[in-house]
Image: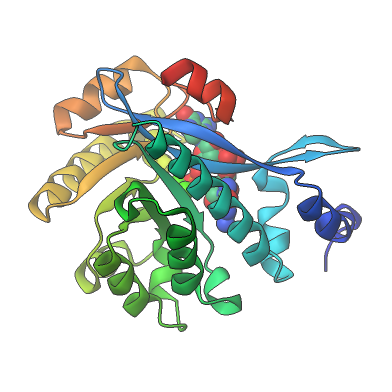
Length: 258
Ligand code: C2E
Ligand code: CA
Ligand code: CA
C-alpha cells in the first residue's frame, strides 16, 4: 500500500515529465590524482511545491507503479544529448554512466531504446556507460543476460552497480562479461569500527579479483582522503564520492571540470 505522499508523487508524474521538472545531476568519477574521467547521471526532481526531491523518495514508487521506464528514458536522453554536445566540442573522451532499473526491462525494449538514442544523436557508444545492479541481472527473466551481451557488442560499457550488496555477486561475475565493477559503498561504512579491517580485506580481494578478470573498478562513496589513499594502494583506479564532489547540476559540472 502506498502512502499518501507516494500517491501524490505518482499523481504528479505526468505533468512533471511534460514540464521537465526532472533534471540530471552529474557526479564526477575521478582518478586518485583528481583527474575527471566522466560522470554518473543521477536524477533530481525540481518539484514546484515540494522543492528539490531526491531519488530515494521516488524511484522505488515509480518502480512499483510501472512509471520508472518513462523517467529513465527521459534521463538517458538528457545524458545522450549532453554527450553529443561534448563530442561536438571536442570532449570525446568523457563518458556518462546512466542507471537502468530492473523494472525497465519489463516495460520496454531497453536495447532498442538506448541504441535509438545513440543513433538519433550520433554519439560514440563507448561514452555511454550502462549501470545495472547485480540483482537485476541475476533475478532477471526478461533476457537481461543476453541483452548485456548485445550492449557490449554494440560498443557500450556495462557496469555492475552496487557490486557486493546482493547475494549472488560472484555468480554474476561467473555468468556474464561486463566492463566495470562499481563497488557498493557499504564496504566503506561499517556499523562497528572493529569491522573496518574486515571490510578493507574484502575490498582488497574484490579489487585484485577484478584485475585478474580484466575489469576496471570504481569505488563509490569515498568521503575521505584516507579512503582514497588506501584504495589506491589496493589498486583501485576510479573514485566517485563526496570527497571529490557531490552530484551537481550539469552547468556547474561543466564550469568546474571542463
Ligand atoms: P546509486 O546508483 O548507487 O548512486 C549513488 C548514490 O550515492 C547517489 O545517491 C549519490 O549521490 C550517492 N553518493 C555518491 N557519493 C557519495 C558519498 O561519498 N557518500 C554518500 N553518503 N553518498 C554518496 P542519489 O543521487 O540520491 O541516488 C540514489 C539512488 O537512486 C541511486 O543509487 C540509484 O539507484 C537511484 N537513481 C538515481 N538516479 C536514477 C535514475 O536516473 N534512474 C534510476 N533507475 N535510478 C536512479
Ligand atoms: Ca548507479
Ligand atoms: Ca551504486
